[in-house]
Length: 355
Image 1: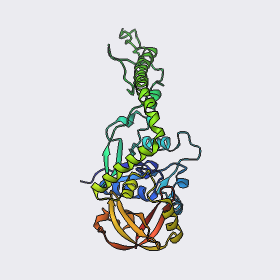
Image 2 (image 1 turned 135 degrees about the vertical axis):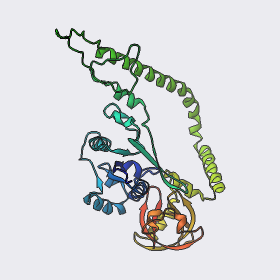
Image 3 (image 1 turned 90 degrees about the vertical axis):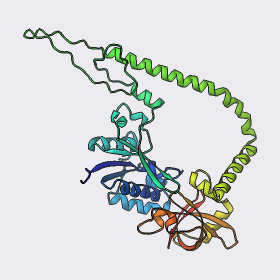
Image 4 (image 1 turned 90 degrees about the horizontal axis):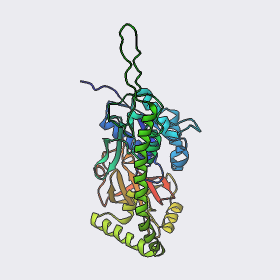
């Protein structure tokens, strides 16, 4: 039996930045393809922030523009209140769609209570050796959620005796029954909106007080740790040592660990500058497969001066159609020909395409 169509609104900016500091159009495409493979009955609408085009790598901007013109990617109107998040939730509410995102949308919990309904929010992350894994999730509550929920509409609602509304509960308006001469029915008891608001405020204040107390307890620890900042070189060397040990145990070079985390530069500044001078976008080069990540492979390119540079080849760049895993088409130690597709100067890493 054919499954009913599943409408899905994709938080493109969120998935494109998962594990990275700069959004990647290639990673977003990889995530959407993986989702459609798992949910073949889904119809997706990909939404990104208005600033997405200017934050991706320069080499990806032309492809982004083509996708936007073709209607494959949607951006909110410039200056839209709430930016991309509000636009995503408004679309999802209108078509009763599932939202694919790792965001909790805390500031919208009161406006869109259906976010807590089962199956309305799905998250996804790439897993090493597996690829993208998607699972149902519930939004995480926080300070923003509490503040949004405190803005309860002043409506009269009927509640069972002794029941106190919890933060995030949907309060349904109940009209008092009118007394008529024919039936002689008495008016139903109605709880005043002011009582409900006070109850919600009381619960919110307790949660906020607990948060402040927790912050106060952490404050002394923060002050004690302040002197450690002065000995930054020692702390940094310890962290570097731990990363090196973890890399050695896993059989992956240290730069590959940084690549997976997506937070620190992968290559040394001098070496990467020499790489950019030697190879231009579109150039063909030889590289050695040295490691694998959850959705790609780490490629070592040796410069003319003999200096090795770590590059990255995502699974989407390893064939058409793309393989499920990089290991399906590459082996550790393989010498392959690649084309330079993208250069990320901030993280000092280049993305390659298998030729």
